[in-house]
Length: 185
Image (cartoon, rainbow, N blue to C red):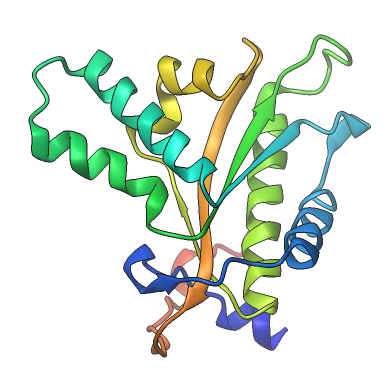
């Protein structure tokens, strides 16, 4: 439980090479597929982007911003294009909606993909990598979705940025669960 309770999001500015090894990525994905999954639908997909492929994602983010905002400034385009390059590994977590088992609500499928993403973050932390879950406009952009090759029934849940951490990150104050808990009688 200590690693679970010590997990924290690490800002991408503190992430450096090396990227997680293939074995570490496999470990993270093994953790992902243990997510709760009503109906055994496996309503998640994972796109692993590392190395030079991050530049391709960078170009896709820039292209999408140009479509969303034709008046985007050079600075805005550069900032958008820099995002995939901020960490040595990006795992895109997607939710999948299928027609099979229509009794399984769509929100449960999205929640399952979210649980898979959280499991990746926990597994990254267990392997001593820093990680952060980000979305931003790119996660909801049809140009990005098409560029990633996602089918109509798939959506980006988040971009998980993962890498080695170049500095020690102090523990932050956590909220008291009692402030968010109701005991119903």
